Image (cartoon, rainbow, N blue to C red; front, top):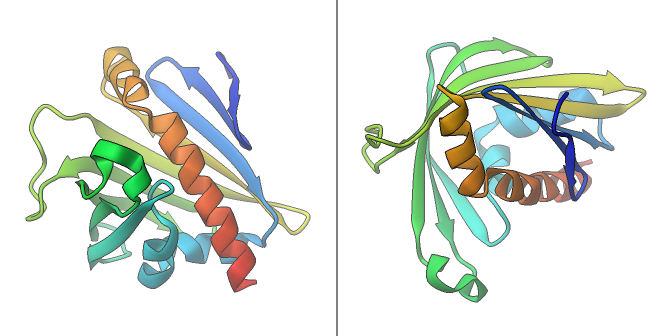
Length: 174
């Protein structure tokens, strides 16, 4: 990997138009996979600290749609407080409990893609490591410029915060 960086417990690298992020969780692979594949679990931790997620649609199957809204509920986040961020993913490939691939777009509350916003092909790999799980996320963008724009929007910091929430969730459900 090139341009390796560490943000909290998250390791990141930029490889051309790909952003690769890795983190290890002290939980079995099947449990980590369920945190992504079950609607209630996913909604309980998805999004950065101070944000809550509502799954409007959740069809965890190839060609299934996940339409969700993240809302900032933390008054301490200033101008972000009360904001909504809608997203829509269409699952491409699911190989339980090893892999999830989906295309993700910024969306509106009806699930329509927001024009001019980056699109992401997200590839999640779950690897067993002696009872722990290494999660490898490879996000592919249309171009290096698109990747740079999304990096400037704070994707690494937001994802790192989100992975901290996942870690807390896994500790609660074990």
